[in-house]
Image (cartoon, rainbow, N blue to C red; front, side, top):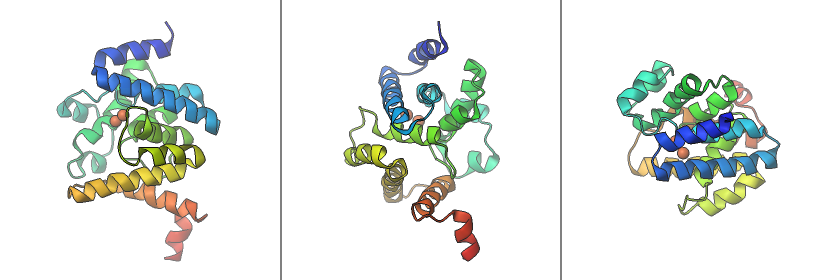
Length: 198
Ligand SMILES: [Fe+2]
Ligand SMILES: [Fe+2]
């Protein structure tokens, strides 16, 4: 059995049916986006299939698994958002994934980060637009995903941030930093140059 089949079998055991179907939807969209942007198909498939691998774990188990630094682990109440960090450790331990690009795509699919690779961006966006997603903005983000993936991420982050602000919930600085990075790139201006100017 090849590695992809083994990962799929294990995900079917680990996840609820709904979450497993979401995972297959993310894989499908991620493959399409990888073709579109010339990204590594094998990497995005593994990232997509494993991105939520620790989603059904208890918070205690997620905390035990996390290898993120303490600022991420303890920043506010990230709660289940830690499943990205826990998932990357599980993916390495359980499936022998050592490729940092795949691991980062799992690790940061929840809070994002500045400097995401194309593989990370694809998993981030595919998670937001896979076929079972039905939120109001999904059609716009689906269209943007193929026009300009950075714009799709900005749109998705704006949507998430509006939701979090309404709930008076904590927004992790990684998410704000990723948005700022993408906005500066949009203007053709690196964040370092901007920081120097300020
Ligand atoms: Fe997730
Ligand atoms: Fe997901």
